[in-house]
Length: 67
Image 1 (tube, rainbow, N blue to C red):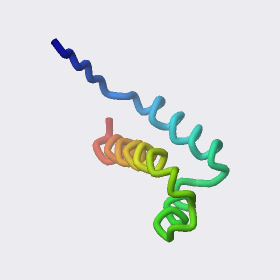
Image 2 (tube, helix red, strand yellow; image 1 turned 135 degrees about the vertical axis):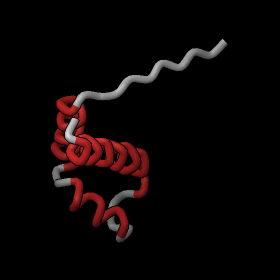
Image 3 (cartoon, rainbow, N blue to C red; image 1 turned 180 degrees about the horizontal axis):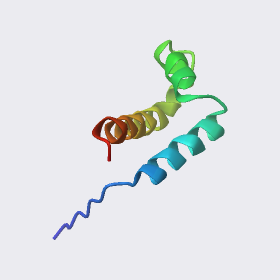
Image 4 (tube, rainbow, N blue to C red; image 1 turned 135 degrees about the horizontal axis):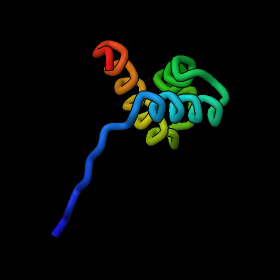
């Protein structure tokens, strides 16, 4: 039997994870995305890009939703 537990990350957790990625990559998400989409960033960072994009969307949902 497979059990899947889901929980919503708090706004603080989302902000911290975004900041950690930006520090790790040495650039803002916007710059990272620009380089990635222009294929100037290492394509092995696909997973990083996907996760960071998800975090940015979650952050924007919090901001727009007022929660």
